[in-house]
Image (cartoon, rainbow, N blue to C red; front, side, top):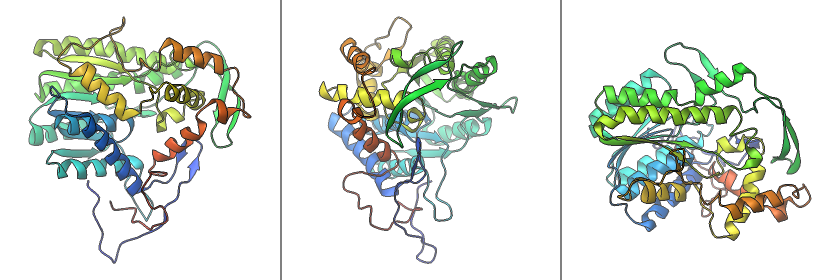
Length: 405
């Protein structure tokens, strides 16, 4: 799916500017996205190779955030051939593609330039059709895979067996949730009230995010004989601070995440016969399209980033995932697990001194002091970078073809 130049007769060039609406930017910049990918690649190269890294990797949900970072680390720290599965919209009618489309095209270009296999599969990862297409691609291009990363962040899922479309919700359970939040458009700190979930909401959210699809992927890959002996699989999760627990860890998504951990236990039992392992990796809060949609989280991240930056501990997706691979998954030693059997790459975020500072600042932050007690300006900058804007070295006044890289 590499984007290539059109002929002069059908080429459309334009100046692309960011158009932000709430927690989404409805435009994206191909050159800025490509530069973002290249910057992550350069970071990985500077860290050096990971000697025990996997060589054949499948990333499900590979186009942005932690999934994209996983693919970059696997390829450029381990020399892996990769297959990336995602659901993104290409450029149509002169409109820009989604940033994940540009990211995936940029990765493919860079990986192939480095002599690495890079296969992109665009479609519904929940469907049996795309699972089958992925299995065929693995057989043809890689033979087998020795690592499967599961990093989907979809709000809805069409069940491949029943055909029912399930929609996840972000709600507390058993109580109304009242807290501070940040209106990022108006730059206003205000109170938010979230009504409790219904029993149906809980079931729906579990159906989308509860680990069933991860287990289906592993079952079908295993049945097809494309999982190598000793293969690892990792699903990404998040726990977060106490200020978000009512709406997150103790809410509908938290219940679904608990189901992911139970799925990991079942997958572990299935893979044990071939020496494989399944892990849940709890990662740090970062600015992504998904996290920006969660009430309270943009305000929390703005405070968190300021504290971590002052302590020289701030990490983005690529830093987190390089550390996950180098220190936990492929150091030559068994990963260090918490009491629930999870890998904790959020250990810097959850340090006692960091979280105590969050608790101190949370009641103090207001609209008036937002930009002094938090890193909100940096939050805004990093948010638009997700869509390829505000990236150093990119000329945003220059016309570009939205269908090309």
